[in-house]
Every structure is written in C-alpha cells, then in structure tokens.
Image 1 (cartoon, rainbow, N blue to C red):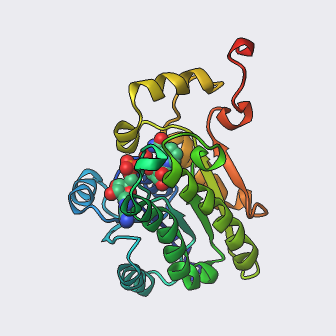
Image 2: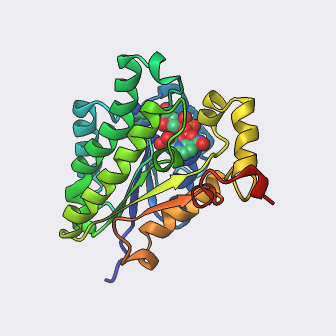
Length: 256
Ligand SMILES: NC(=O)c1ccc[n+]([C@@H]2O[C@H](COP(=O)([O-])OP(=O)(O)OC[C@H]3O[C@@H](n4cnc5c(N)ncnc54)[C@H](O)[C@@H]3O)[C@@H](O)[C@H]2O)c1
C-alpha cells in the first residue's frame, strides 16, 4: 500500500495573530498543524474557533521555559516522530526608551523571542531531521533597522537573524533548512499594544506600499520557505515589509 504521509507543522505563539494564520495556512495545505501557546485563555478560544478540529493539536507551553519546552516536544514527537516545519513565531514586545527598560523587561523579551527560538529548534531537531524539514524563525524589521523604543525587541530580533544563519550552517549539514522572515508592521494584538497613533502615521509615510501588511501576507512567505519550491533556500532573512527596509530612512523631500 502506498499511503501518503501526513505532513506536520509546529507553530509557536499560534493561538492568535500571525501564528494562528500560519497554522491555518499549513492546515489548508493538508498539514497537521500543532499550535503552541502560553496563554491558556487565548489557546482555549483559538481551539473553540477552529471548527474543523481534525489535523489540529494544541499544547500549552511557555517557549522560554526549558523544562516546558522539553516535556512538550517529547509529547509532540512521541505522537509525530517526523516534523516537516517548525515556525518559531512566539514573541513579545516591550517598547520603552532605552534608559527606562528594566533588566526584567530586557530578560523577558530575550527569554521568549531569542531563547524560545533556540530551545524549540533544539528540541524539535530530531523530528526535523527525520522529515528533512525546515525551520522558519519570525524576526522583524526592528531587527534589520534600529529605532528608538526597541532596544530589547530590536536586539532580540537581530539576534534571531544570526541564530537563523547559525542553524542554517549547522543543521543544513543534517538536511534541515533554516530561514527567517522579517515582517513589517502587521495589525495584530501586539501591534495594538505597542503601535501608537504616531507610529502608525509614520509607518504609512515611510513604507513605500504605504500600509500595514496582513497576517496572510506573512504566512504566504512562511509557507513558501517550508515548501519544496524553496528547497535550495537556506540561511536567508526575507523581509515582508512593503519595501520599508529597501527604502532606508529616505529623504521626505524625495518621496513621491
Ligand atoms: N505584529 C507586528 O507588527 C509584527 C511585526 C514584526 C514581527 N512580528 C513578530 O511576529 C510574531 C507574532 O506576533 P503577533 O503580532 O502575531 O503577536 P500577538 O501578540 O498577537 O501573538 C503572539 C502570540 O504568542 C504567544 N506567546 C507570547 N509569549 C509566549 C511564550 N513565551 N510561549 C508561548 N507563546 C507565547 C502569545 O500568547 C500570543 O498568542 C512575533 O514574534 C512578533 O515579534 C510582529
């Protein structure tokens, strides 16, 4: 019998926002989507909102906690010994002037954004090797271009980009690709929390496409990077940002 193997994608921080759309995209492509999140209430409403429960699985786990990551991935890999895609999407943002960022703020951002990405990748690796799968880490334009208020967030995202290259080089030898997507601003709960009215107006002015991106536009890039169409792409950071990175600061007088 020639049974077609079910593909599996694990997405962290996927109970809402960009992660949820990524999970739904993989699911729509026939994957089993495994949703990890540390917010129990959001995870429960996510589970309730996904009508077609088949091929979804839900795990409550804080990706910044090594013990929780170890036990969660043991459970996942026990059930799904081959994993085709790991999307390290869980992230938090604390925007404050550099001198007001406490060490607790700094540590919280690094723990989830950077340490979580490292820990989940390490825990998932045996199952990724088994599937010759790939990793996509969700970075940010804040890791490509520095700006005020993002000393912790921007640094964590820049570190994720280098972590991605490290993974691409070392895991590439094992047949596992690693790439990163750096989204521009996307309307989510996170954006509602940290994008003031001023920030929103400035983004519209500085982004050549003059708008926020959608969660679908980010999930399209993530899905492409995990697909056979991207089979020779490894160690790349791809901005999905409406041209924000390409434009640089730009002179207001030269804008069209
Ligand atoms: N929204 C934007 O404008 C934007 C721009 C660039 C990059 N990003 C990145 O995209 C990713 C998703 O962001 P979003 O806008 O959808 O945010 P969001 O806040 O709407 O969703 C993030 C999800 O991650 C979960 N999460 C947070 N910490 C976690 C942890 N320690 N363990 C497990 N789950 C955790 C949250 O509970 C939430 O469900 C983040 O990495 C973010 O930094 C977002």
